[in-house]
Length: 423
Ligand code: GLV
Ligand code: MN
Ligand code: MN
Image 1 (cartoon, rainbow, N blue to C red):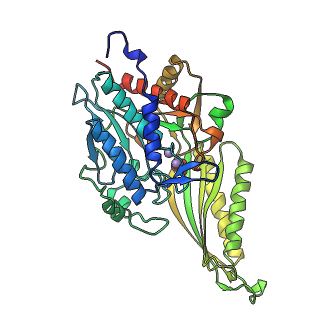
Image 2: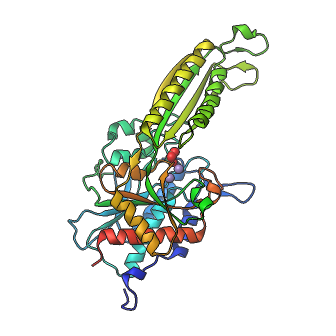
Image 3: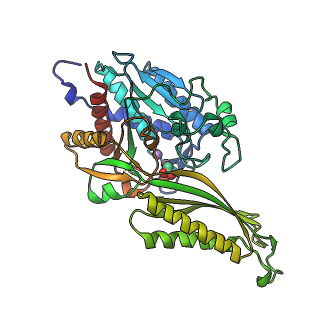
């Protein structure tokens, strides 16, 4: 670093970061009628492989040591002066939902890469190694649970159980898909290299920062998440000839459950949210009373007791609704994570660094699940949020302003520098 610049003045190159976001966003691009540019890179699809290949090529271009583990997590390491010191890790995910954006997850990975390139170009050395990772199947949209790769990374799920997970869309086995795309790596998982700390830069994905005119969200933790699959089975029959009194129509309880989820969340208020985002009707034909309906219920709350109450109410309601229609109900837990609180010292540091760079800050919990909530099981962890235009995410119109990306990445840079101990 030139003597005229102190480490405190170091800033990332936002044009380079934005270019990488654009290039990765071209893989699996989905365009909307009003100029929207989103992404479809569901976990372990061909598009995911192409995205992985591109990010790994960037990691290698920077001379990083790239390790791919048994569940396809990719960790790139920039060495520190003390190779025995525990690394400071950044990262997130590059898989997306089917109608996702270019920023969700990708920002945390490419922001991390940008931090490392900035340090390299300015010759800033640190005592600790610095890592940037992308974790397999964070979205959980194809293989449940969400945050699967980071969960396995920290030992919260066995590799074998994860490899045996089945895809919601085509029932493919996760382990087979991992082999198919060439990302079943040799590095053991769970990791033996527990980070000194983990920091994830992410878009907020909700409206709070934008509504309040705040640049940096200081994330205090992540709310509890519960996903349940419900299969309601009735009796398929002719829509024209079957009297109403003889019907066992699973679509009727399924629809009632969707309406009840909305009613319950409104009644509970606070942070309670409830969603039916998946609704598969079989055989899905105009003149056939359905044989079965598969729905997926997503309920979340920052308070685990309230979340348990919501789960119990919905299961009781679903059981009764299926019974009244003469249908059977089978349920399966897809995902269940308790609320997570990040370490106070890490929260304080994000806030202090953001303010020292002149940004407005707000402490807030995350409504979305993140890899950081898994890393928080093994090391001090924090997240940096930047605003989402119109609060939109999991939507091809998802967008974050360039200035907000720069602000978030510079907070990440200085958070990591401090943790990694410049020499
Ligand atoms: C993961 O993105 C989730 O919160 O659903
Ligand atoms: Mn994400
Ligand atoms: Mn997401």
